[in-house]
Length: 211
Image (cartoon, rainbow, N blue to C red; front, side, top):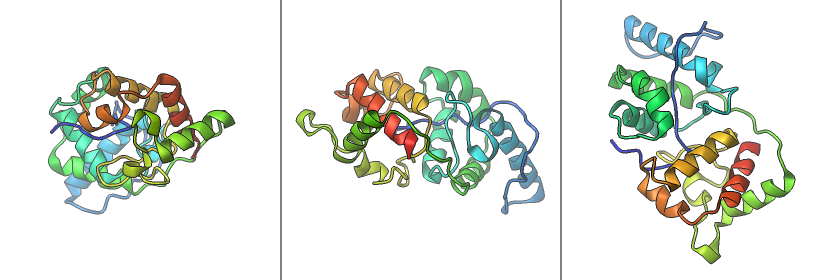
């Protein structure tokens, strides 16, 4: 299944990387005892890169907390099927997603979508204002639509369109660049951002990280 939505984002998603001690018992309520235990183990593994409860402390790896479940499922399937082929996906996620079952993918998506979102952080006030305008209004002179039309007025995400609020700015910028250069296949987003300049991208991601 191709990954076809972002600004992502997301916006893109990189789930899992090695083991880590469990800092808090994940709330996993469905499935057999064996399935629950397996999902706990996978969540612990994800925490190495994505942080406890999906709140990443490294700008290399995205926050997963409060991300929409449909988006997480789409990305994990794209990693597993190797149809999302940007460099980070290949380096971090192809191997991690390969053994995931459909039940594990659904369980991870459900778990992370229910976690409390990471808080926004401060940034350059002028860039934040510029980015907010682009996010809410687009760039009409260049026929670039508003990001909010798909990602929500508060960048909270909507189904397959990812949550962008509070996401690490360096991660978002990297995803915008790989989509614009078609290293990451995302036809809808490529069409939206193909004429967006790097300074405009930097303004938008600065705004998104702040909320």
